[in-house]
Amino acid sequence: MSILKDPYVVPSRVKGVVRYLLAAKGQREKRETLEALLSPKALVSRGDDRQLSRKMVQATIRECIKMGLVEESEDGSEVAINPKLNLKENVLPSALAQLLLNTPELTENHDFARVLAWYMAQDFFVAPGNWAEAQKKLRDQVGEELLELNDARFGQFEDWSCYLGFGWRNTLSGNPVLVPDPTAYIRQSLSTLFEGVADKNIPFGEFINRLGKYCPVFETGTFREKIDDQLGDCESNYLSSVTSVTLRRLEEEGKIKLERLSDITVSVLQDGVDSRISHITWIDQSVQGEEV
Image 1 (tube, helix red, strand yellow):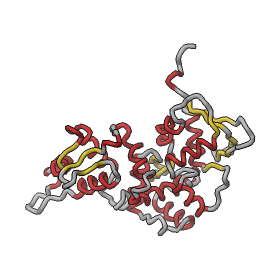
Image 2 (cartoon, rainbow, N blue to C red; image 1 turned 45 degrees about the vertical axis):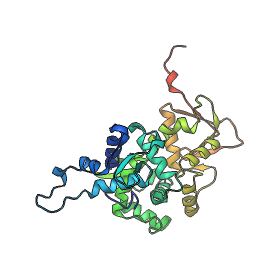
Image 3 (tube, rainbow, N blue to C red; image 1 turned 60 degrees about the horizontal axis):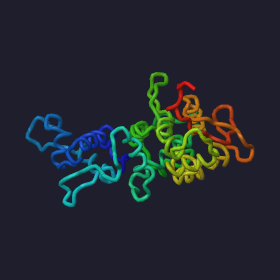
Image 4 (cartoon, rainbow, N blue to C red; image 1 turned 90 degrees about the vertical axis):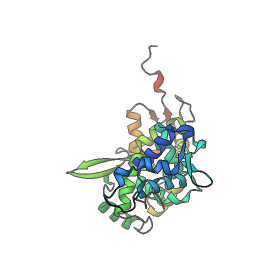
């Protein structure tokens, strides 16, 4: 079962499992002990003699194991943080994004990746903000059954897309809405996308190829290309409005610089003014504000 299909597996519970194991001796714990600590008797007791249920935390631990975040001992009695991840709590969203979106062998959560790729391909200015709007868009664009989404799963999608940095919640006319905005995700990925080299421009097309390879729900990525083929209305040199607006926000924050230095290979940002861009620079903010 994936994070979309299991309503028990939400970001806060995954964070609870990781936070405890990171602080535990050897970053490991007996499974039974971990379940009891994260779901104590006082919280799960029904007030009678019926068997206590710890289904929520048990499901979360199982999903942490399936996604490669946590490992279990051979007999299943102990669980531990996957040592290959070199994990710290402050980088958990980015580590989870890689496990969920860019680990080909972990296919169980590819349904989430497909839905996210579809959502990142929406028009930022009229993107669906709730299930009723999303259901209509799905039906019109790719077929509701294709992405296996429903009301409950859309709620899971909202929780996870916001936690991983691909959107945020807002209120419109008193009603909660989801906004597609991967600014937080791309911001924390800039060092990786620029291979640690700041203050040096690179061709914009190269940057987009790196972005799609690193996170395949964006343009040129495997999940995104399948969705774009189904949508059928994307010109090759036009960036989606969601990615375009995100890059403009990062430029306004002083994180990147977008320029037109060449007419040979130009991409068009659908940011409200259809800007033409050929190069992008990651700005090293650690030296900003220093006296020259």
